[in-house]
Image (cartoon, rainbow, N blue to C red; front, side, top):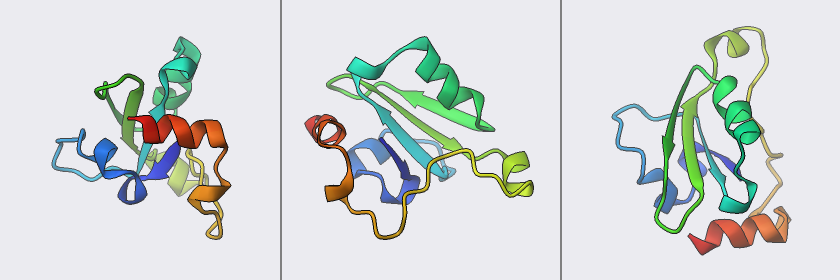
Length: 99
């Protein structure tokens, strides 16, 4: 699951102890972890930190690539404004709430 950092669950935001506030936060449940997922998340960002929360999974926090913003491209998912927690797939919602 991916959120703008300010909108991410506090239990995941609290893992980030750096003084800078990142643009986004991604939670990858243990069942979805793979080197390909790691590369897809880490490879497209200017700065990424990785955390292992209690209970499993991986939390990534990062800054969007400056070059992507300059070109008008954003390297992370932006849900429509009308999207609510109820619009998320049930399995993703359950995985995020589990931790």
